[in-house]
Figure (tube, rainbow, N blue to C red):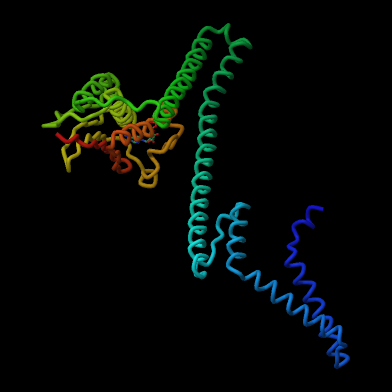
Length: 340
Ligand code: ADP
């Protein structure tokens, strides 16, 4: 039987010896003496118990127990390193091994949790537009097609949901390519000013629609950096597009740069809604949004800033944000300048 296999032989023998010794001691108490064989049995029990205890406390037994613990996945086990000579060194090595196994397990558990969260988020993000497409097409099929105006409105909604799914898939592919290192990107001389100017020109109509002043100051004396121009434009597109999206009508979006501590820093500053202080530390995480419904309504995927962070850090740079809720935000993307 399997439970029998789990009983430790050593513990069983200890218990047996204890019971026998206790029985003989009781007899000694009531009768006042022991017969020869009984005294011999107690003597043998004590000798055997000492031998077992000695074996149990020996350094090798302790090392063996730690190895067993590790083999059975009890990674938190450690051994007292104050063992004599070589045993002590072996104990240290085994403890280090246990520490590493424990760290690796924690990292794997964290990665697994992240993977599960990610899959749950993607499924949720895809399910919402998919449900809308299904509902609108079912309503169309069950008669709404006959009413031209309603039909046109439903078809526009279906198109909007399909666009949302397609944006999400594009961003997911982009992020996955960046994370897997499949797209390391070129390293050529890039003028950040020129890349930012191209993005500002492309996004100007969006700003004008909201009567937002989109201002780009010249970057003074900025040397070129070594970068992938397409990826730099992607960074500026995501940051400036967000600044326009989260700024109310007639607001201001200001793009400028400064040279500091051997790094070139581009600042994208807006007079928009700002980000609450408690959300700031998580804002670059995938799918993290201050207001999910509002972001979706504005066509956001929740992946834009995660992509920005990946690209900037892939170029040895750093991205950060300062914001005051209700007053506006400033995103800073800084890049190292190559040695001349
Ligand atoms: P989204 O597709 O939702 O824009 P992002 O990853 O680009 O996804 O941004 C994540 C969240 O960060 C946004 O949903 C928004 O809550 C917040 N955010 C980003 N940029 C700004 C900004 N300039 N002003 C205020 N909030 C911002």
